[in-house]
Amino acid sequence: MKNPMMNKRTMEKLKTLFTYYRSVNLWALKVFTRNLIVFKKTWGTTIAFNFIEPLLYLAALGAGLGMLIEDIEGMSYTLFIAPGIVATSAMWASAAECSYDSFVRMHFQKIYHAIVATPINLREVVVGELLYGTFKSLLSGTVIMGVITALGLVISPWAFLAPIVLILNGLAFSQIAMIWTGIVPKIDNFAYFFTLIITPMFLFSEVFFPLDVLPQIVQQIAWFLPLYHVVVLLRSLTTGMISIDLIYHTLWLIVFILIIFPLPQILMRRRLIK
Image (cartoon, rainbow, N blue to C red; front, side, top):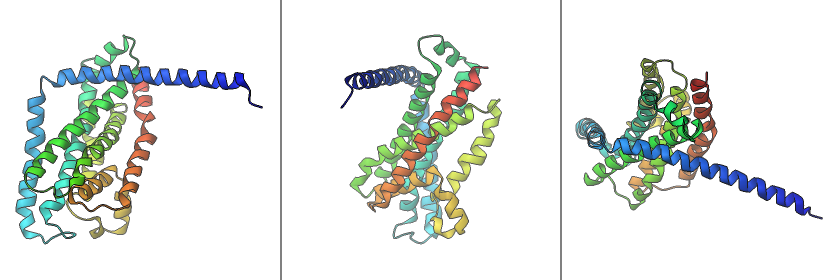
């Protein structure tokens, strides 16, 4: 026989939990909105940077090097690397935002200290920063997606699902960058993050060449890199090569995001509360 008191107590706990997470989300959105207001003052420069650098990669590697390379997996070299350029641009945007920019807001501008003096707590600040890093990933990736579409390098209507992949990309790399922000003592130390973590992903995540040309051990290591899965998803969506494997790539990203989600909050709390 069911205990009505037990059911009532369970419902109250669930209601309290729902109210708590709703409050966290609302305060985190306020942190995100604060960053967005600041971004409105510099959006022109940011968009220009996001536009010019990937366009140079496409021109130099696609139109230049691509003239010397045969078709890869049934597509031209320019068509092959274009989705990878979208993915890497989104990665750099979110990684830079939640590393250098977050460190400046925390350490030099003392914005985190000012915010936590309000009803907003540190966890909500970190979640708000992650949301903003995800926004920068979505923005940068969408800009470059528009460029490659205009150049005729998007040949499938499945590309309309690309923003979902860019959001997953932003969540993953915003969290990775925020983890380093919670560890490094000085802003100069971020050079190690980009040299040892971000650059290897940029080079070995099937952006510029298929993984099967690499030794087996390197292929296995590359499979665990989040950027690899983002590149595969975007390339498949923009070229229309849809298969059941895309579900596995998507699930891998989601699991990765959920597993590391507590780490930025824990490390940032240790960093600020000493």
